[in-house]
Length: 115
Length: 113
Image 1 (cartoon, rainbow over the protein chains, first blue to last red):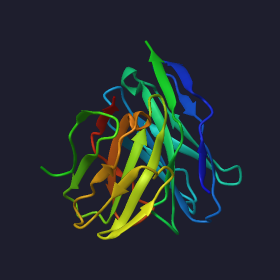
Image 2: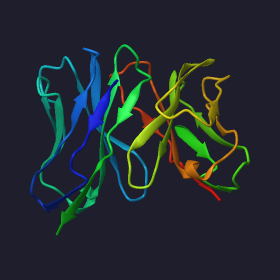
Image 3: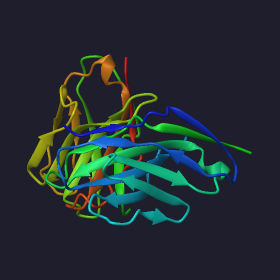
Image 4: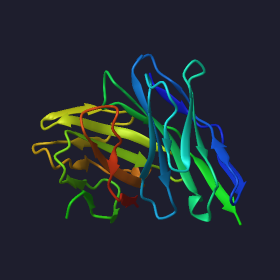
């Protein structure tokens, strides 16, 4: 069964500094996609970044990058130059290729950006 | 309106009552999902649907029923609501590829008294 683990319930970062949010995963499917979502206090789910299991390069989207280490089964989110608006809950998620309906989320990490 | 909508946004119901949460998407996405998010936790998959008339269980399906007669609608029914089903329910949709993100509705906050 697929599983996502986020070991940091809460993180603090100073404004303008970089922060890494950890995510490890487990799956028996050799083909899968990894996602990060942001959930601000208003409650909506916002897609941030995607990494495919066969992608050779780490994904980047603006200030977000995904540090993908396939052998270690980790997919950490790096936020550069943190902003106050980055304060939110962040979720790591996975979808398997053989069954794209099976989607698993981690328990999330609450990020607080300090001014 | 384009996108994915959920109704109602807020619902209070009593234990034992049947309640249906509605989800509608305008993109003709083949996949649709229902999740629940309990306070301070991540999302847990209740049911998903790969296409009209094709549904399958997720991680926590007990006590819930789904149907999908049309591509754009995916209602979730709590047959006999229990207090443990108090949660925020999110509907999502995506194209039929695991490489694509899910688009989430705004959520329905359900309280069972």
